[in-house]
Length: 383
Image (tube, rainbow, N blue to C red):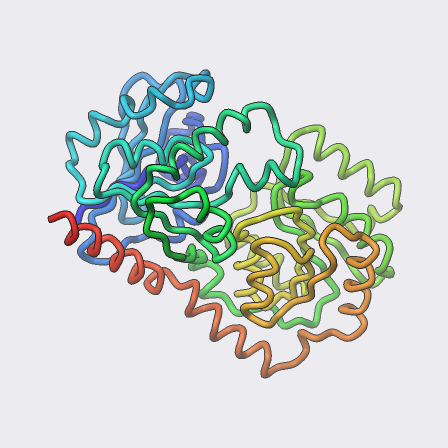
């Protein structure tokens, strides 16, 4: 079966197999990388937009063929992505794929998948702009992408969501679609690594340095409830203003000697930092199914999160972690303090169950079995 995925360009592809030029890889797209290599019988092509590119470029990476598709440098959202189909059309005509899977509704990938293959498409939901805008301030561009998101989902025939939360949130927007949950796999660098021993006084925050992920709340409560025996390790990058605010708060609270920040780390490096920690702190405002949380669970870290959206779903699902009242910093502080005092992750039988459960659920082949079942169902129904 030949499958065409539409997604952003993962940094790993840009850094490992391209010539060092910036082709517009603004994010890790780690859930795309975690699916690779595809299983036997799947010929996987992945197409990504190349802002300002001159001509189509193709490279091989870990069993998949990536195609860079030229498009204008700016202005696509202002046109509600109405021209984006034309950028992918020649590649689609050349490949004639059996299935087109568009990853995400916040750009045009889901929209174009539906347009290119009206009966043989899948629209994948990561985050939902319409849900994010209800809870956090977002840039003006999000008003345009929300319109595109609603248009994409209104006419989609097949939709997959990465969590039950995102499926339920999207359901009112998908009146015509058959929907199901298919998790994203976790990268092999985590699945094949021994988990944290849980004996280190490290607290990890892993995520983008921005208000939605709650980085400032994480810094504040760390300073409030921990003593000199605990360290806060932050992995992630953000805008200059957001990172400056984080470092300024660290200085104001006098925790600089217990604070470490890393950006641009590889998966093995992140796994190494996780082994130095016992708690995963992610006070996110909203998140459909954070990859970082899945990786932390696989590595045996105890999550402490606000009780909302995807994080609460995973903490309840695996019965591993602590939830606090949504948005209540005092309650989050109390819950983190109690977690440090009681060390619930020390229960060896609980940790063993977590390891077995997560490493099966988030394995690449487990996820591919579900995707292939869906793709074959679509193909048979339209044969």
